[in-house]
Amino acid sequence: MGLLNFLAKTFLDGGNNRLEKGQGNQPERERRRMKSPASAYDRDFEFRLLRARTEPLTVERYCDEDHSSALVHNDESGNTYLVTETSCECEDFRKKGKPCKHMIFLAMQNGSHRKYEILPQCQFHSGKNDKGEFVPLYWEYYSVMSLGLGYTNLFQYEVSGRIYGTSEKTGKQTNRKKTIMVNARSLEDAKAAAAELGVMPPYAGVEFVDTSPSYEQFNYLHGAGIPAPYFICALDMSALLTRYEDGDNEKCPEYLFEMATRYRVRVSYFQSPASVKSCIWSNLQENTKTAIYCYAVYCRERGYEFGDAPIRYDDPIFTGFLPSEKEADYIRNYQEFGWRTLAKNASAYISAKAFLQASRVL
Picture 1 (cartoon, rainbow, N blue to C red):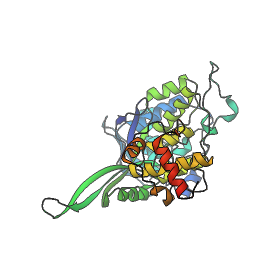
Picture 2 (picture 1 turned 90 degrees about the horizontal axis):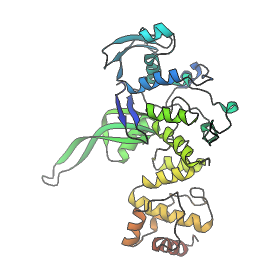
Picture 3 (picture 1 turned 30 degrees about the horizontal axis):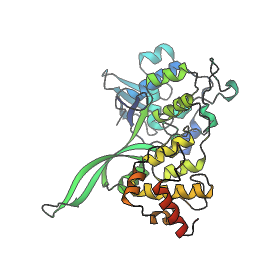
Picture 4 (picture 1 turned 120 degrees about the vertical axis):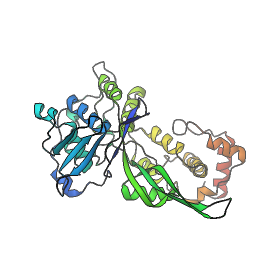
């Protein structure tokens, strides 16, 4: 399966493509083979990368055992080229001698694309653009080179499996196909995530989904003078642009990323603490929201940072909080979690506090 040519709506419209191989699973031997990343940002390479991520390219056939050469087909143009890690038959490579979209595509399929990644330009940037405005410096928030496409805690996968059940009308066993999107660390973890949602094996397909930024996003980014690595996803781009617009330079602590991962909420390592909290909250199941709200009350009353308290957020004690129907509705529809402090005079807050006191947590 190659890249699919369609764009998804994220912030300023980011593109989505499916890659044949799972991301985040790059073997150590492949990492050792990678060349030193580039030291200066190349807009020409950026253009080729976006084409590799958004055009309908597919691998027709690998020509060797380690998949370092292949026949790459463009479904749009109908052309097929012999591509290796160092060369391509296409006219673009023959003319310029630079990595073309086919070579970049093959590298992404093999998980060796990070050899093209740019090094953080720490020593060349003051944190302000030509207008004197604040710009976020991504390496100050997360400086480890991601092995997948994007600097996120989890990757997105499309999983096709089966849902088993019993027909209410006939009482017979049912077995139907179901395709869902999940957030996971790897191909195998994607299967586990699907099973958690009731989509069971056998799995007809587990495909990585590439959410590429759009040309418009990159143009906005460069126009504002914001530095960025090449292989970011739309979520990373949105995080950097939001920081720029909000003037937000607060670094997000690791424990919030761990919390997001625990609940399978995909976030960018470039996001702010408030943004990560908000994402976690908005993606929680309703029953989990009640427990997390109770945990948030505990953190506020004790003076702990949300996500960094002696009692963990997933401790069973918080699931014992049973608000009234009206309070539960208030919690479910709470819109600004992470962006503002909880209101102490809210009925749900008062009930949660009373429950924690009765449980001798406060």
